Image (cartoon, rainbow, N blue to C red):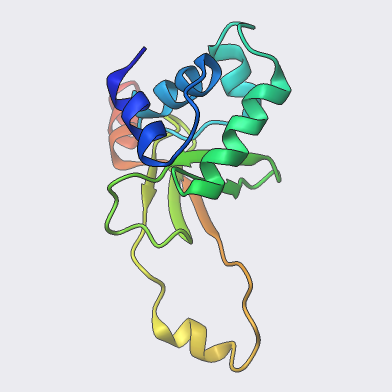
Length: 141
């Protein structure tokens, strides 16, 4: 049982279960984004898919995780703790190492172009290759 995961669950008024601890520990140990399938593989069938999914949904509702869709339409989850630049809307995801970086707010010109349209949700995911992975790839050439 990880103390940090337990503390996060308590702070958010969530019951501590092994499933919740295991799922949260994966995110706490990495700066990466994960799909439901990724998480299923990582917990080695200790928890069923629906239990993992329910934990993900709960974490998103509590603001512990963020959910967005990648280019293929698959839901991807990333940790959303202690991130002052995170607006819950814009991210860069490296397709090689799977790291995710929250981006600052979009320029006001973007929102002004939308005029009086009612925005209910807004997510922007930019996918590519981070500098670190580009350097590694150039070294292997």
